[in-house]
Image 1 (spheres, chains in turn cyan, blue):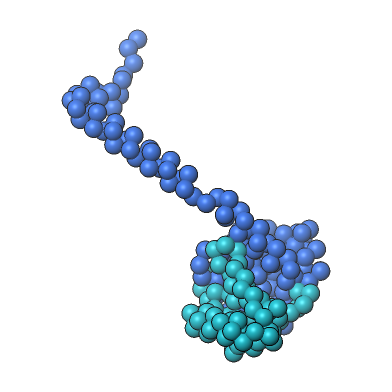
Image 2 (image 1 turned 135 degrees about the horizontal axis):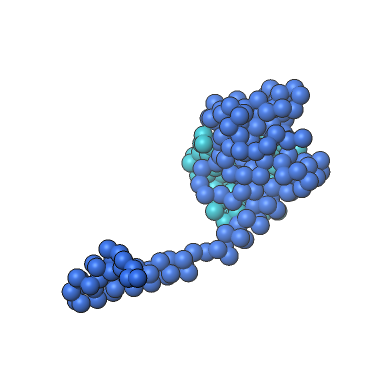
Amino acid sequence: MAVQIVMDRNGDTRHEFDFADPKTIARAEERFRELTGKGFRAVALGRDGNPGTLLDKFDPLVERTLFIPQLQGG
Amino acid sequence: MDRDPGPMAAHDRDTPPSLRAWWLQRLSRFSRSVITHWASLDFAGAGAAQARADRLLGENLSQAQREQFEERGYFVVTGGETGKCYRIRRGYQMNVEELDENGNRRHVLCFMPEGHLAQGDVMLAQKMALELFESETLNIANRIPPRFSRFDEAL
């Protein structure tokens, strides 16, 4: 199982999908496009606090993807 | 000695009973609406969001950063493009500091993710931004001279 973690007002919302299930993969890819289209940054989370990798396209093999809302200056 | 009852008392005395009743009714309605509004606020939900965000932050810090954060209330990250060090303190804004080579504050940086996120999420987003898209983040962030920081210089 893989998970997409979206930062939001609830802390985060998690959407799991199955590597072996094309239907859930398609939904995950759609969510990826939808969120990045809104300005979220997608990050493949690293292990043990390592920075991870910025994703510019959906990769179904990434185990944990974090979606960060667009930044603004304070 | 008679005390001056003040202008309000005079106002009450002069206000016709029906108008006073109307005002009292309005005041009572307003008080009820304030109480209803406060009762509807999801304080429990905010606490749960904070707890989830703290857990997510904790899961994505290194062991050293976690210890530093627990002991000192901040952790240090390295900029992915420049190798500069940044101190991220507990907070929502004006909580990121660019450090010089001696670990002293060079600037305070003010940037955060959009939306009303819990503190742990804000700090994690700041960490990821500096590590993964540093130059873009620095372009967005407002730079504030160190003397305006709301934090004492860390030891």
